[in-house]
Length: 354
Image 1 (tube, one colour):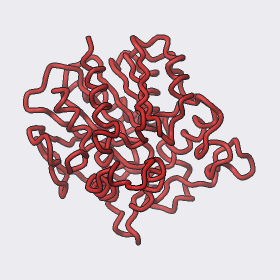
Image 2 (spheres, rainbow, N blue to C red):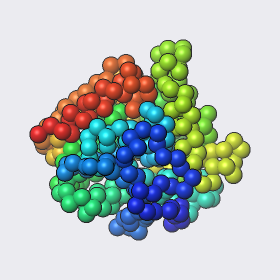
Image 3 (cartoon, rainbow, N blue to C red):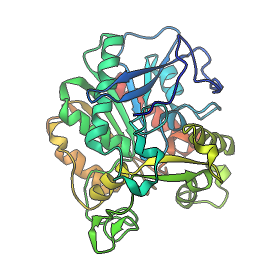
């Protein structure tokens, strides 16, 4: 494994990164942990000036863009993690899965993509979450932690919670797949990721990773915003920061024209099978209080995924299904009135409930 070097210290930020513009009283510290199979995983801690003695929260990104670009942009309205830490008064952590951001990248990521199979599959990423949870438990003294995952991150977090139920006190999934249906317009059988010889199989020739430039991050987002003026829904400053942070997550981005970052394709293979109606884990093993959130205009998850997850979660301490009307897949980095404010309110209420 090859690691991305970090400068770590109390209150330190990554070299070259700007401190987020809001919640200036939140101290950010980057550190690394090692998984049981020897992979270095980066976490960022966001600590309020006077944190409450409350369950810590770990945020997990989705399939393409790693943790800091997903949850801690350095512009107003761009740090969902910072807003949660400030509103909750508790310590929040952001994790990068293996192959993403500041976490270790396998050497095959430096070779042509066709030389490897899809990297960072779910059964591997749950090891990363386990290492992160253990570190947070040690730092906080908490027996259980809260997990929040966006899109594929929601699937990874729920998978983990089904394997280590005693370690997770609260679980929030945001726009996550669960195998609730065999029909999906863009991800499952018949999609561009299907094997041309058998549409029910993932294409075995797709390679280990994909390259994404900034322009590739916005077409799906643009299509899901139901107005012509995208800026009225999505702050251009946040969108620009999102693209810049995604490129900055990979030190090799500038070596390509146009600049592009690498993202493992294991999450896409796992999502293909979830979109095909298969379930990679059993939500019936989850014991945590659970909040299943789905944006009404989400292009990734389906209503059937949320319904099936709730139906299967018979052992959970509690299960709440929340649909955000008129919200999109990217609700947490859109304008407050487009669902972001309500999402924050609902998560705070959920985590603060007795």
